[in-house]
Image (cartoon, rainbow, N blue to C red; front, side, top):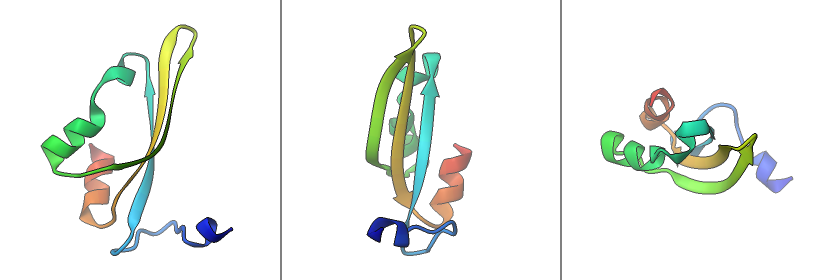
Length: 78
């Protein structure tokens, strides 16, 4: 309940945006967060992650947080 009260659909300038990233197949082994940091100068904090295999193919889910503001749109476009 306390966590839910702090979440908002609208990014706050002083807050963080939480993003769920899904990797399937060959994309599951790409260093997406490293590229985001290197190419876009956006740091992502990993909140949780799972690595699985479906029908013999990798399937990964990461939940990350980035600082809200201009970086949010930039990261989503990445």
